[in-house]
Image 1 (cartoon, rainbow, N blue to C red):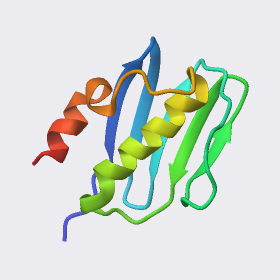
Image 2 (spheres, rainbow, N blue to C red; image 1 turned 180 degrees about the vertical axis):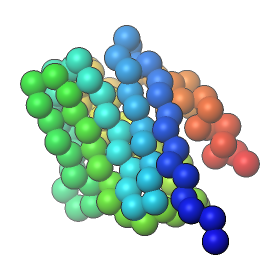
Image 3 (cartoon, helix red, strand yellow; image 1 turned 135 degrees about the vertical axis):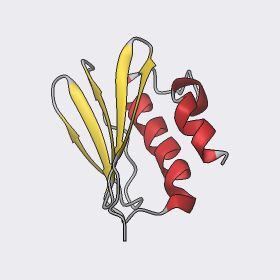
Length: 105
């Protein structure tokens, strides 16, 4: 049996780098050099960590290919709404085209 290989995606949203890391056990999306105002609803299984200039959202679930892209897009929306205007100005496929291409496969 072959081991799990972590996946990392990076994109730029309004000049800020967003990084998604997928491991066998969880997904993490992070932005640095921001002033976050966390807008994470309860009951979704998401946890977050925020400081003066960063925010990251964790989704601690086992790897599930079928739902991976849907979860990444949802986490992305919560993250950018937490440090932007409260709206998503650029959709997930625009910021992470390589991830979107993989989701179509």
